[in-house]
Image (cartoon, rainbow over all chains, first blue to last red; front, side):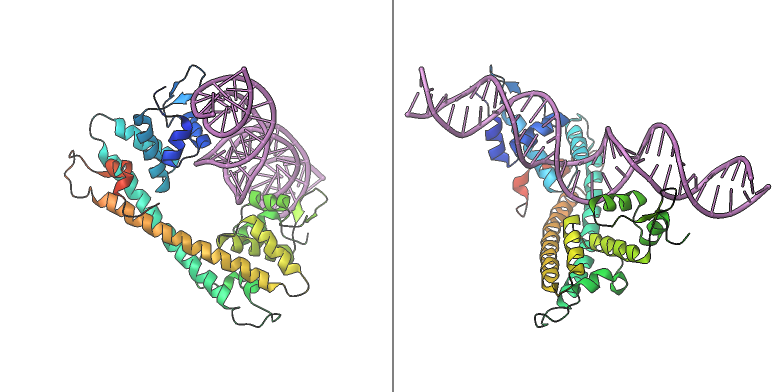
Length: 140
Length: 140
DNA sequence: CCTTGAAGCTACAGTCACTGTAGATCGTAT
DNA sequence: ATACGATCTACAGTGACTGTAGCTTCAAGG
């Protein structure tokens, strides 16, 4: 029988079998053809679609955004400005997350190093630092 | 009546009322005293505990880790080495996430700028870039 | 003292993006 | 023909909350 099984699709895209079925249920993938026995069989178009979804997910788009992107792809006239908008706002989010994580990193490393070098059994400041938000260098 | 209401606690710590009750259900906060009518009343110790939880959550610890940290705090003898270990592994996670987000940022900004400057109505590359993982500069 | 309205109560369903389970059926290599 | 891995459906569970419905309680003003 021609077509890829769900397992083959999974192997090629790195998306788990259960997740593929979940995407189908969410309407992100079309209902695929079936064998006489009822197993899913996919063509290359579905593979490409799934790769698109996986890629967008890895870039941090949530499933609603992915659905939107897919809809845009299928719009016959040019709606790419919207895709641009979506990607741009995603970029802003990512930059914001990086900034916040960097402050986090500073704080955590401060907490951890407050304790480095103490001989075992000596009191260390990890728990205190955690308890005392006032000592933080940055807001969060 | 002495003691803070749940709402007062919420205001002071920034943790939502429903979330405080959720923490209680999870065993992170002790069962507080109650008024005759059954409303929760908290003392300062509970406030401190809740602040500790909130702070640890903001630093990205999950609730299991927070519970562990609390247990360590209550250990009579010195178990701070373990707290140190937990914080250190959190720090490693945070650094890893920053690294991955940075690659993401590069990729997204590449995608977005591939389209900047095109006059409206011209085809742009956002959707293509999203569909074509092969064009990515980094793995993900 | 009594009313009123905000704040609190419990219990449970819903969120997101999956993951895991049970128990049955299918497909294919030998 | 048989064995065994792959697939099927349906549903429960995850984490960390959030939201809802339908009550009861508290504290302040009149």
